[in-house]
Length: 434
Ligand code: ZN
Image 1 (cartoon, helix red, strand yellow):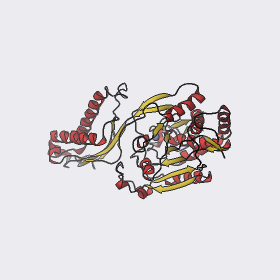
Image 2 (tube, protein in one colour):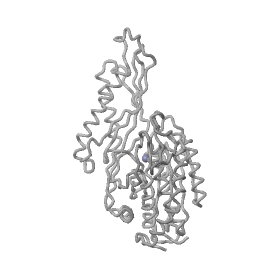
Image 3 (cartoon, helix red, strand yellow):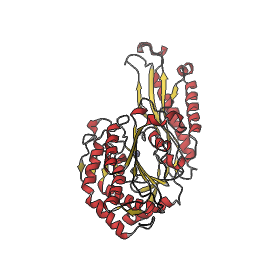
């Protein structure tokens, strides 16, 4: 039995050689994972493959869907529009351990398998889900965000096993969906009762620890117009033009929030940390008719500490005021449909044992202290930090191109991160001979 925290040099060397020995298998495993086009609503085959992979390792697997957890009754659930919760499969695997009091601390390792759309495939060098390996990079949508992280956490445990050990405390390996749209996958694991002394989510942070992260709100602006022949367009109203007025008002709201952000403890030095994005637009039916409808899917950031409901009310007020100024929208104001994220920001308070243990593992492998990052994007750690009441670490490998073209995971970084996670598990949970 190796006690928690003290990471023995001999054990570290054994873990490093186990990772080297399993390396080609790890790369081809990640290739398989990337080749699943696990876009939102299409994650089931990927999750079933992972459940089988976890079962093959002797881990106890709990597979369920979001329909099984009563989302409607969960206070922090976000609305899912156009996606069937019954098709959204979650996997929680529990690694066997002796259940004897060992002084080790329990751990949740979590990754998300949902990936964002690829955009036009002809703008990619390789087909978007190729899994192609070239010059030390593994290519494909989701390779960086965050299937490489999943490979790191799974193969860190494999290395511990291959070296003849197992964690001396309970470890849950969780693969979830909905990270890119609502967070309901992560939330469901808490609703199902999974808890631990710490949680680590290996998002692609390029080996920095996430100190603070913004939240985000998703909403759809639904604007109606009055269709007439374009020859008499003054008599009609153009829903697409009207939508642009509303987008401008929302950008001004984001600008005001960015002005206030200068005083924020964590985001004060980040330029324009509150991001507003109109991400998808549809509207109109015919080039020679004034459009009768326009829908814009929007995303607005929110800094830690501000309640989500407070910003929701402000968005509603800003849109109502902009409608009141546009003659054609006073009679029929735009509707706001809350259709995804209602995510607050989060902060990892410095000084936790979990962060110190991860920092020690990082330094042992990379020879330099672990640095912190401030993120203007959302990730799932917020649920564990707030609802779960545990230290929630967001730390993982590096890559390029996430949410863009030619997304790829850096394989050197994957190997390094796998070693760091193996040492972190050893330090946090302790190891026992299997
Ligand atoms: Zn991610």
